[in-house]
Amino acid sequence: MNFKKYIKAVGTGPKGNRELEENEVIDALTSILDNTVTQSQIGAFLIGWRTKLETNDELIAAVKALKKYIKHKKIENSLELGYSFDGRTNNPFLFPLYENILKEFFEKNKDIKELNLVISGDFLQPAKNGITSKDIFNSLDLKQYIYFFDRVEYLKELSDLTALRHELGLRTVFNTVEKLLNPGLSEYGVTTAFHKPYVKKYLSMFKDYYKEVLVVKASEGSPEVFKDGKYWKEVNGEIEEVAFCLKDFGISYDKTYENITLEEALKIVKNPDEEILKLAKFNIALYLVFAQRVDSLEEAWKRLN
Image 1 (cartoon, rainbow, N blue to C red):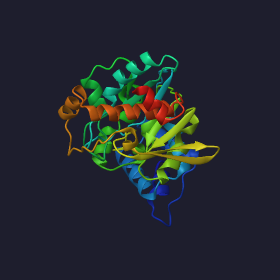
Image 2 (image 1 turned 45 degrees about the horizontal axis):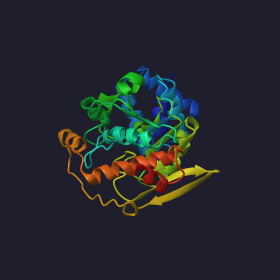
Image 3 (image 1 turned 90 degrees about the horizontal axis):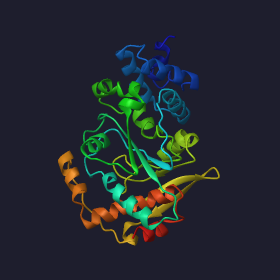
Image 4 (image 1 turned 120 degrees about the vertical axis):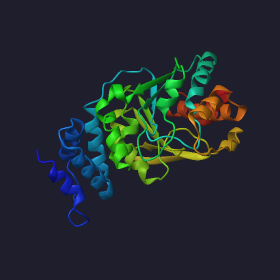
């Protein structure tokens, strides 16, 4: 195997670059994850590939490569929430509030099939600084409906690249593909995109591994909604868009933070005010729709309240 040919394919420049074939992507990422090439070669390849811009087919192949390494543990009746691994700075995490909301919801709505939520996390990855889902889970005791998968355990080969990724200090292909790798073998998956071109990328990358994948316009690379937005899903080969407005559900949350600390984030979810609780309930309403537990946001919201 000559890894240099992959560096040349993505790092020669606009006139010399070419798209990698599926087997080449898998071979290149296998060499990286198996640590059979040098750190310098890995860095050169990742930077060149990101600068060239990965194609949808290359991203699909990258997911296939990572899938070979994942240690799965099935969580029945679950939806995976695809959080970014590069930290949160402007908002608290809402998921610590979901456990009690779901517990109360299913006690009152026994006609609806239960739903578990799966979240993955790891050490902070570039390119942002901030708190991570792993920081939150290590600080709280969540026992029901919320399942955390630590990438150190289910995909150590990728976790072990953390130091190199910080040394590069840039987003790489891993930022794009790592959020929704389904270690819990969930039926449904939801991730987030802010720009519509990424919607098609995410749906094409992940749809083969779930009954259905959805993409929501949300905040800071996580499927947690803090303001008006929309979500997308594929229906009969076409991307369908559904918009929502928080005021329609009596929510007027408008807080933002600057470099929120772990202590601040924990304080908010340990002593939530009415507006943050309503916001958390709205996100649960979205997930109930995404996992086909209810027919509409309006039905979900009515049942939650």
